[in-house]
Length: 256
Image 1 (cartoon, helix red, strand yellow):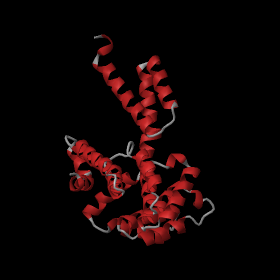
Image 2 (cartoon, one colour):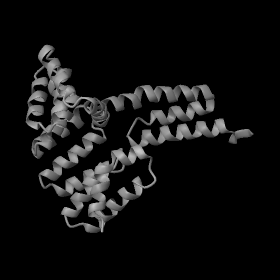
Image 3 (tube, one colour):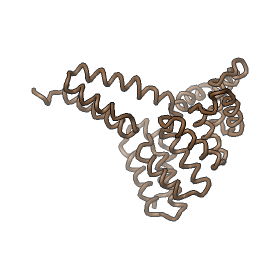
Image 4 (cartoon, helix red, strand yellow):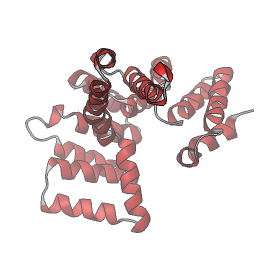
């Protein structure tokens, strides 16, 4: 069957997906070079690059992302509301480690207890390296943004970018844009939203950007974003439509 056999086509599509993910998420161009070189060496070399990318990039990103942690904890809370908070609070009382405080702070954010989350993050940052811990900086920046402290949140995200640019992921970029908007720094917020909407996994960034543009009187751009959201979820798998219900509802409510 030559070059266009199912195995070669499948290999090409997997490599293309990895290349797209790498470019969209700002990963090192060495991954693209590795894919190109491996494709000339052998199929097994290509598989080795796939596995390395999955283990070194995709899985760590998933483990760090707020959305992944929110999904896991939501599954626990469906079975026993409040269980996750109780367990994490007990871990703080028994262990008092940085990780236990961070986990409880994230649970406080989910419960809307932003002041408690801020206190926990600041307590976790008391150690010698805590002030430069990317996970703590990102979490505290989010907590302060949700508490309405735009300037303090902005400063934390600026520091996060300096300390660990790789940790300034799509979730952090969106929170940073929201922190700018809270302060009325609309031009800077628009610039930041324009960066994040192209790489945010879901419709939240587009929905929030559309609301900001509408508030600024840029109705045409806002309408285009709301239409994009509805077009994106149309025909999408059921699990995706379910996860994007809140943002789809916002788009429908604001689309003329």
